[in-house]
Picture 1 (cartoon, rainbow, N blue to C red):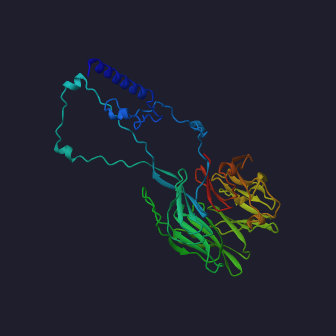
Picture 2 (cartoon, rainbow, N blue to C red):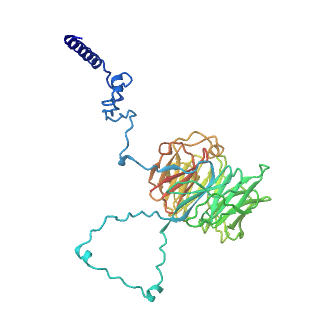
Picture 3 (spheres, rainbow, N blue to C red):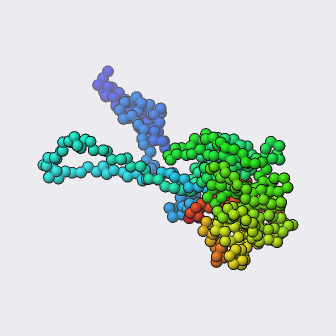
Amino acid sequence: MSKRNVILLIVILGVIIIGIFTVFALYQPTSTNTGVVGDSINFVANFLPFGKNKTVAPTDTNTPTDVSGYIPPTESEVSVAKLKKVSSFPVAGFGIFMKERFKDVPVITPNTTPVTPTTTDATTTPITKTPTTKDKKQKLPAPVLPPTEFVPAIRYVNRATGNIYQTFADKLDERKFSSTVIPKVYEAFFGNKGGSVIMRYLKADNKTIETFLGALPKEYLGADSIGTSEVKGSFLPENITDISISPDTSKVFYLFNTGDTVAGVTASLQTSTKVQIFSSPFTEWLSLWPNDKVVTLTTKPSAYALGFAYSTNPNKKDFSKILGGIAGLTTLTSPDGKMVLYGDKNLSLNILSLDTRNTYSAGVKTLPEKCVWATTSDVLYCAVPKYIDNGNYPDSWYQGEVSFSDVIWKIDAKSGNATIVSDPSTDGGEDVDAIKLGLDDNQNYLFFLNKKDSYLWELSLK
């Protein structure tokens, strides 16, 4: 081949190669939004090991936008609910007592910052003392026991099973305490500062009222109850019509029929000693034991009958009239025995001073059994209905024909000033018809049952 033809062939091949690279350069695929180049199309890059396209990290570093509309509350906007539901089931009754527990001690983090030795520290040789026989005989310091505190606690009875549960008032943590099953407990009381329980229920014949008195196993500080404790005890006489606990919770007063009369008996929950202190041909009574020297007895109320209230001293066994001739009379005597809160068929609430015999209005309409006295006898807490429908009271309420939606009031028994403490319909989210109100010793917590479903509630008064 001539030299001219060789040069022409080289030029033609050069043009073809340049054209091929130009075409591939124009149609090379771009990166996708994932940062990965289309390797399967660029076969030139696949073939040549150098300069091969690699995965590229995304360049968009913007965080996703929250479209939920939720704005976290500031620390000042976070509030602790004052009204809480304590039980997770209907309750037959509850008791309040003081219980010891270990204090929560803050953990102190040791300082781990290294200390740079000074010139003196670096050059001075520490002097060590060789322990002598006398030093070895010295006793080690006694271990320091963790600090403890006494706080309000609550025990309550499951209405369906008779199992007992408990929790602290300031830290609600429902824990099962006993495994003894007593089905369909209608009413329950606690005595001996939470160490005894009284359960009332109907026997299989659905007529006979059985009253079981049980002693609860002792708890030990720091031991966690596993809910398998057994409740052992004995039975009080059948068909007890009414029962109440002494103010120190060491005794019980109960009424039961003996033929054509009714007998009133006090019984020690510790020694089982029984003493009859009352007898009457009239058999329909409601009792209350406000202090050691007074047991009050009020005739069972009805809008169609005049009611009367009396008092008896358990030690003297006397019997004296407090007030009477009032239709629908219900009463609640103060802990010091000097005042009686009473209501009538119109649910008008009044306070009678037994010293002066003066009567004045409490300023609200409700039933005394929807109230509780403070231990100082100067303050009342009452569950007051927002609305009261026409009816025959208290009969309509007892029979379940009427149910109330209550507001909790605090009433000063001396000045008569009354203030609203809580509206459960807004504070707890439920309508409450409160019964069996109770206070702890320091009046920091108010407990009650909701008559609508028998659940236990707690209201912080602090």
